[in-house]
Image (spheres, rainbow, N blue to C red):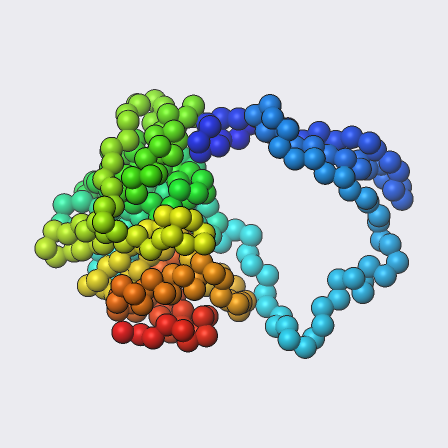
Length: 299
């Protein structure tokens, strides 16, 4: 299989099965190896049994302390959520459960996060253009360097957007922009242009609309993490620090990354009312406080 790695471009992925045995009426492998770009990435030994005795008990879930919820849909419906005038979140277009925020200024648009692939990012860009016709996407900000959050960045670079990130991430973005891929950037090459967050904050404003890119790292999830803060609308957009599930499942115990995020919000005195996310649904500050046992007090 040929797949696209954001940093290395098009790569071959092979799964090699070996050491077959008969289990029941089927012949199955006891070993499989994953070779990625010619390098052995993983090797597994497995034992296969079909319908063994007692399997029902192995998967039984105790009634006490658990809540039955509907399964998370495999393919969430693409949509564009309007959070405020000139502020939208493009949901599930880059990929299922991956979102991008777009904020329109007087003469341009700022996109926050570029998940997915070049192909899916092209679709996100189209949705942004439909939401704000006639306004170019001048900037694209990324919350952190993980591959699933910058996989679509090449399309924004091809679009002419300046990348807003931390200085340390420059090499990651340049490597990704130079990778071998069959996309718009490959057909019309251009080097990425940068605007860096310095001193922990970068402010974009035209006097009416304001977006602040704020450093909230180091965080257990990544050393350098940015959030987008809209002071007028009291909205924060963030990636991998907190999310509400797309189904009716409870949030679960707060993760260290979420606790760190909550502490940073308090330290910076942000009067947050809503938290939009790269993953999941837009939350209220009350949703957030309940999820972390009330350890954040609304300003």
